[in-house]
Length: 484
View 1 (tube, rainbow, N blue to C red):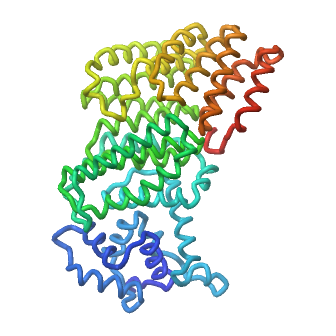
View 2: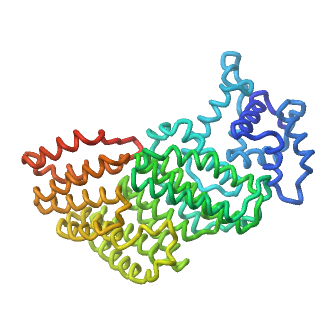
View 3: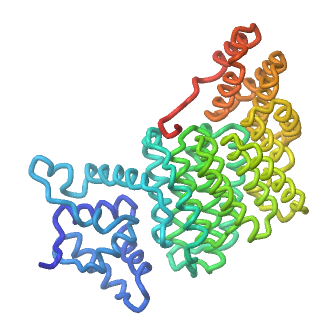
């Protein structure tokens, strides 16, 4: 017997469409765009078919159109069409297309995003980033207790490296877009990035996610523009999604950060922006380091190095090598760490004229590189080397207040490792003062890390005072199940 839609399936199809804010014509355009050109019906015919499917006038639907629906909505055919009929006691939850069903759809979207993957099509990529941003705005804390998926980022990195590239093509939507519009998005992202560094993520994160959800993500589908403009649009959206991920990381929402970074990587891939893709892979590596997954961090750091090498961006290669060194240090492999650092210094010396460095990588200067080296030595327990490089790291851009808080705490840890308790507490107090000005759970965590480094001297007056000072000035550290 041919497949027949049930009332539950038809309600689900309507709810999925309305959840995205689409009318029937918009859905028809999306479906036509996802078809092979030789198989496309007319827009009028497609609209009529959708109306008949949703109303139940036509309950039959071929496999071709079931797969097409699943592709446009970024889900699986089984999930969308195999809902079993419900008994009367459950009918209020699944029947109709009202708020109850839409709530079910929202939670299904969030659950599905737990299965991290690099989308295969442009349409799916645009749908997933829009869904993620919308779910984040509605209930970002839903992600707080979700686990960090150990394999997901490595899998995404592998696919990014070896999967065939998709031709983007011009945008055929209904909203005209030019290069100057894309430049405005980039300028907004840069402004958000500066504020993030100055204030920490908590003060502006919702504004940034709202900008992605309301202003930028819809353009990925609706823009009418040339192929070069569309490519730059996807690249700018990737920058913005990466920033959303980094802000989630700054608030200890590691599972949410991971999801944004994977989708940012997909957007950069469709934009054919290998430099930005390499930077996103570096961010994934740093995230893996933070949650103490050194093996996965090495995988992604090496993928980032590959991007730096094949695009001729030496500073990106240096960043990837420094991250690889840090991951080796977490494994207590001092030899591998030293080799990676030596290669990183060689790559950094080749960086040359800073004019060729993209704006989103401008932060990776000598001071930032010194901080990365200091982190390696801290992980190896080498206090004198930690101190030396942390001192260099403080010769930094004064705009990076959060970075200064991190590096000041790092210097204090270097002193702690050498038993110089008074100096450790003096710089620790400075780090607390800087952190108190920020909305950054990660900065608070860095103070907790310093206090752990000072644990052998917990009975001293200086450490007791520093601990009390930090408790009085800072919020309690946030730790979620997402971080092992």
